[in-house]
Length: 249
Image (cartoon, rainbow, N blue to C red; front, top):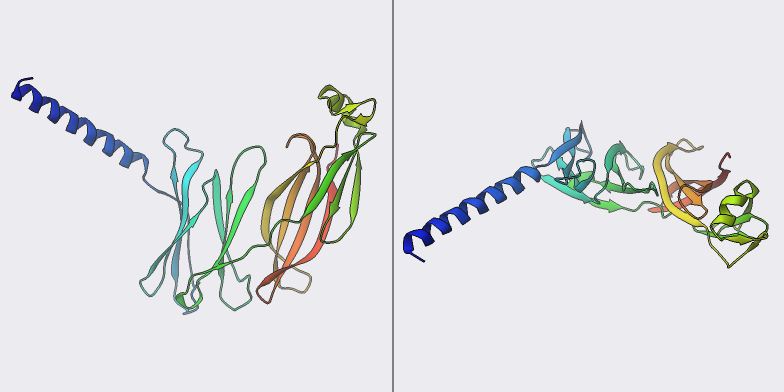
């Protein structure tokens, strides 16, 4: 290969590489999902809170990176990474009752399960602290003979039974039952939180309310929703109440 031809080839390669890098930079630009100004450090000065995301190139409805960016009044910038997902949001609420608002953020993961991931952070006195959120309610579940299902809430010990004869033909077609008897022991699908949101409890303090979906053989086969309310006491979440709502059919 002649020297001139080789140099021309190298120049073309570098030009192509530069174009690819530029294209990647264009597709990795962040987008601002939400913005709010408030005092979240306790110094009575406004801080700027930005919720940002980086979308996939070919999937604009899904964000491969999501993070909170806080520009505090003292000039410090804090970056709080969250999980990737389809949608994200945040609220400013004083969940730990220390007189300063905390960052409560949520990410919808997308998909048929409708799972939401939630995060709680404090920035009081310019110290970033990752506060816990309550784990989903622990639930034992299984189908029963006679087109029925049963769940048991571990924290309360209460058992709930559901009659599913209206789904008889569907379950028979899928081979779950034969002449009303289960072909094999089968558990239900107990999902994590479908939603987790701040609420005001009976004592007037802030807490959280979570909703979990209990489904049969697929997420579309919803049987019930389990609602739980939580109070934050001494740095830990305490289960306040559990309610089981059977899906209307």
